[in-house]
Length: 141
Image (cartoon, one colour):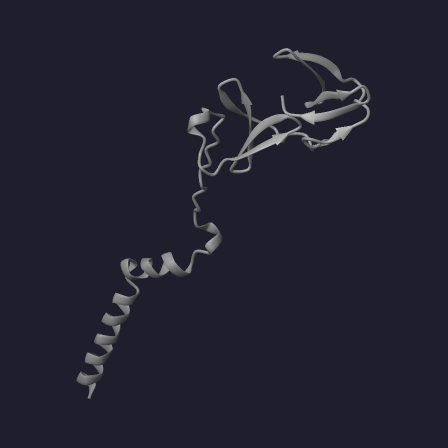
């Protein structure tokens, strides 16, 4: 009986030594001992394009005319048309006037501008065209 007991004890010691070996214990340590907060999360890299050629605007671009200025809205960023490209800008000012709106009086500080032989009045990015002596219409230049 002593021999059977010693064989069982030997097998038990051998089994426990295998379980407690560093290589076996390390795999359990990796999965259960580290809290999730310590895992490294890779941040998604965001690349903002600062200008686009008109023929290279993405299909998702939404074209807007705000206060007489043409903008492209791309992935939440506003791009203002400047000569031959769209350049990223801050969010444009809220519209005070809408295209085609008739007004009886020009806003304060409106300045006269001649463009293509036509006289316009401009105030804070809004363009006005005289319809009669006392009426103006909001237009896009």
